Length: 564
Image (cartoon, rainbow, N blue to C red; front, side, top):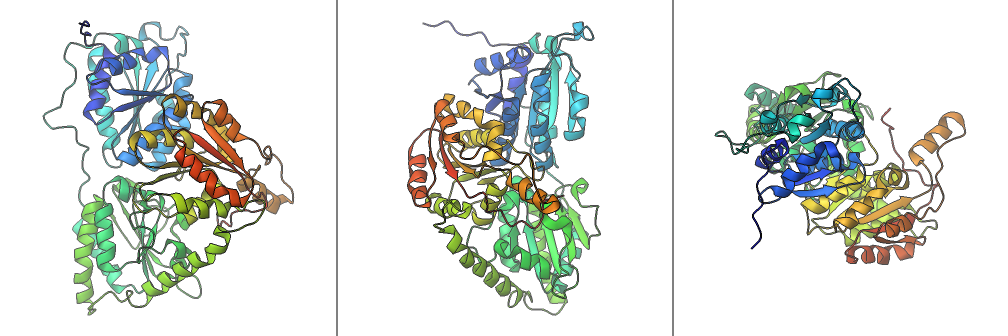
């Protein structure tokens, strides 16, 4: 009979126990000696915590962030001291912009040698204060569990975001005491946002009751805060045209009568009131400047967020509300009919004219897409990729975008059937998220299709982590749109200067051979007629499989803004 393993009691074991209380089941990491006790704590926990080790620390944090965005529970990344921490800065910043509840635990050089020039000795928290809810150091072994618990509470409290905690070597390796953290009397459920001010909801309802051409924008926080059902019910009750943004995509499934995302230009240009919920008024939404086209006056803008600090301040708002988004949509669905009756209207005035107009524009746009989605052009038109992919995607697929022009096509032409099935880098626009997101998606959704849409430029940031997919037996389909250029930079530079530099990549580069060399599989596709079968082979392979699609570099995505 095997000898029973003695439970660990060092600071690492206390940290793992505290993380588990907050629903963490996977630790994403890259090996480093400063954080060995965290691994020992994971291995000796009952049951053990899953360890997924990657090839670059940013991938570990991207995976933790995707876990948070897909499961709506906090993600955990563990990195070693010095460069282990500094390698995470872009990924932590991405989580900051996305409002993703991520805890990053870092190793730290020992206190007793501090200032002597120890290996990887640097004070990490000052580097991360600007892009975290809090960044600090724990120095005492007996306080590690409490500090980690506080980190998770902070990360999950409205407005959610990343938290960084590094732990001095003595504290992590030292004796934290025999009693591991256990459920506190108050529980470890995330703190709930307060409900919105009823007066604010009434003011918004009054604006809607007086509007003729309203549009409702549903953003990522509607999904992340669990408000998608209330938002869908409010939109249906009030017959509001909806434009989906970020992870708000899928709250109304593709084909829904209220979903007018494909007519967003017409909707935003002619609207007289735009209600934006759960996303910032950033470059993706024209900085909140709506209306004003074709002789229409500028639209009134209403902004709704889960916390006051995330309401727009860069432009005037007709009204705003901050607080729990489920409570907001529930209250709005009740308040607007009352306001309509007070205004003498029996039904929303936009339901019979404005909504059908936008729905028709959306249908026309979708119909106009069909020729290019089935294009036989050679070289391959990037839209043909999405025409083929749409035929094999299941309703519960997780689709991940990491790239510029190639992924912009995906955002326009792939409409999810369910919420929580779309991941892109978000407003920070950081390339290299893809492999980390794909790793997390396969762990979080083991039975779903997981598809990574990868630009060939983005491939250079994280393709080595195909090795991680292979080692951890995580089958993912990777579709690389390979046009051999930095298209998002090449064409704007040509327009500005009449020429371009540093905007070319290797034409026809065999990224599929990289995947095969790392233990996966793949193929290169150069003819449009071969795309469908290649995608089916990829989904049937049961291993990480990269379909390297050589697309036409002369086709540029017709974007209206670069975000600058």
